[in-house]
Length: 322
Image 1 (cartoon, one colour):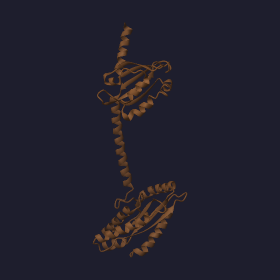
Image 2: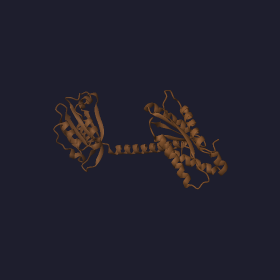
Image 3: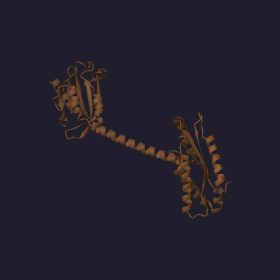
């Protein structure tokens, strides 16, 4: 009597732990439903074989989990996996009688460790894990949000540290960082390097004659036009008080540099005509489009060439050149 009582308590404990308990004769895959809680009654009690049960159950698995469920229950390797392990399991969402999806753990196990899968009973079990899984997913979402927030703050500080606050262009730290990226990109893509040097016309004259406010206004106007006109993907850098650099990777036959020059000149002409200043703001620039050279570690050589071209323009444009 004591043994029967213990067995009854064990049976009750097992049935309270699982929402569904099904025994399967692995020899012919015949299913026997041992217990089925009301919330899963729509899965049915009459299934002639395990694979038939899997096929009918698939429609009650959440669409996002069905592919994983089909792989998990694939009859081609189901028994091979059970030979290697005591049990196999997966987590998925199953639709209950109220049509709501709840997280469950599906377990398929051999009836005894020493038995092989073929020729012995299997147990198919469904265990409710919705509360635990919901908590884990909520904590995971909170952690992910926190990490994204921290990443966003880091990115903002990173960009701020490399940005010239007066103009919005990158500073020398930014130039060092992006020079390496541009060199790697040119090497990998086989495209050409684009380097442009720009220098404000007559900044010293503006500062000495009209004050530093006029000089600051000129720097802001020129940097704004350079940022707008730079070729797509190129970085604009303020390398000194009135000196700028634009660097990027470009196709050798690209017309973007000519378009950039046109935009800069038109932008400053429009700026000068719309401001009643006793002076004109201007800029001189020069660029090169040259291939990546194997072993290049800096853009210094190409910057020097672009600088020479910039001074050729400055000799023509800047009446106050030093």
